[in-house]
Image 1 (spheres, rainbow, N blue to C red):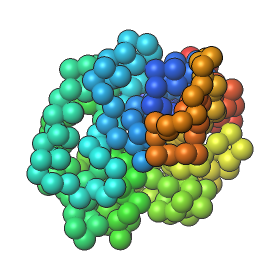
Image 2: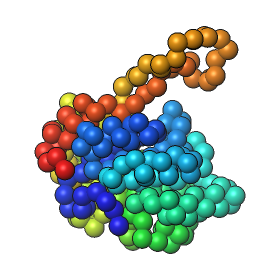
Image 3: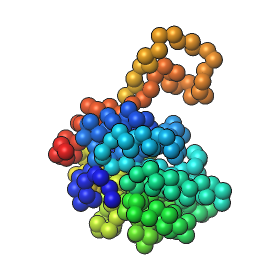
Image 4: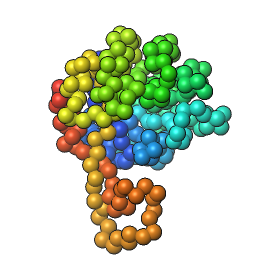
Length: 257
């Protein structure tokens, strides 16, 4: 069972990749975190150690991304075995839910594999992630997820940001009719969350509100670089911003827990 608010209550989910961000999300008043690794590549499954320590560090809901690599969502048999093993790991380590997404070659929802992952998850909450935004027919894809009894859909409305996809999100939420939670994500921040909720009628929102935090290292050798991503300094981390999380919670009219 989830430790966050019930599905009928407003909920803010914060996307995180560190223990510090998990704690910041909780301090800011989020109801749940989605724990990932490699956010620069859209997110992959975090390590067992990360899941274990985050679970010990927060009391709010913990959902874990199940994605064995970056890139598309058409997986080999070996990659699919990894996904099932990772779901078992999440159950053992006390996660409240998992975040999954599997597509066929034609871009449609792979219902057979999705059903198999759901079976492996047992009592865990199931979110189908933004692989949905790469499907050719979103309404047909939603119907497939409803048939599978998926609990939640994370989507930007098949646009770069949720605000740009507001029309489709509204339609999806209406069509779901409370049988599945439509959770907008993608560019959601304190300045647009109120409009997004008002225009779509959603009860949950997903956001990644991070700020750069300087390293405490004194000795700083600039070369050789440790990452191929040169946009972020080796001596800087992106951590969830407590003030932005708190501002989003207030804009969403979520009462402090």
